[in-house]
Amino acid sequence: MTDLVDPEDPAAGLAAVVALRRLADRLEDSQVERAMRAGWSWSEVAEVLGVTRQAVHKKHARRLVAAGVALRRR
Amino acid sequence: MPDHKDVRAILVRAARAEARRDGSRTIEAEHVLLAVAALEDSAAARLLADAGLTEDAIRAALDREWEQSLAVAGIAVRMGLLPEATPDGDRDPQIGESTKLLLRRGMDASPKGARFGSMRILFGLLDSERGRVARALQTAGVDRIALRAKAAEALAAGTR
Image 1 (cartoon, rainbow over the protein chains, first blue to last red):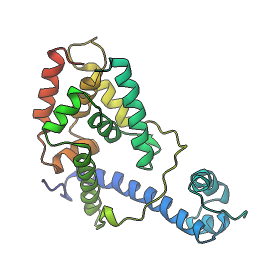
Image 2: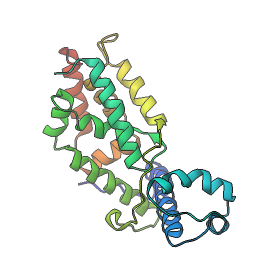
Image 3: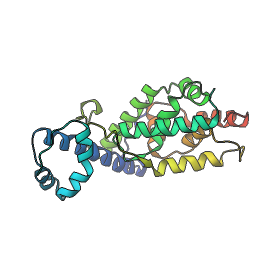
Image 4: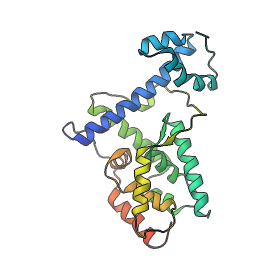
């Protein structure tokens, strides 16, 4: 096993950017799912994420319907 | 042993499934690597396994790469503790940039003009010192250069 963590190394710094994007994507998927399971509306989720209702709906609706989440209309 | 067209179709399907499972909108090199490792009856998969790179080992190495890269940004996360998201089974991930690069590198490997099989794809995967695949192999303590030399040898000997 080798340690990749060297804050002076641009390769490590750039890899951190990729890793953060992956983390943000994973968190968004899981937390939107959690909120909708808890009965939040698309508008409420959108407001917290700072995006439009349409954007969050387009990105997540199909996945959550397939996952069996009961979605509110608004 | 399936012929090269079957192998390509199997690889594309498996890599796409890996991308979906990963919640990714694109098929990246790491998804292709997992697909190669999962190939049955394949010299490329055997080469990986001989280096200790089974599917499970690759997944573990990718998680470790993720954790270590996040640590550079001061974030301590244990992948096993991250909340799961239900994957989008209908999503159709498109070919990502890292996959385009590995295909080009595989294409450039000698002997040129030979058919494209899993060994050529593996060579393309191993032929970069950057990106998640190279970093994951490094965390796993795998000698990427030596492995690439073995893939090149196999290609030269006629393996596709």
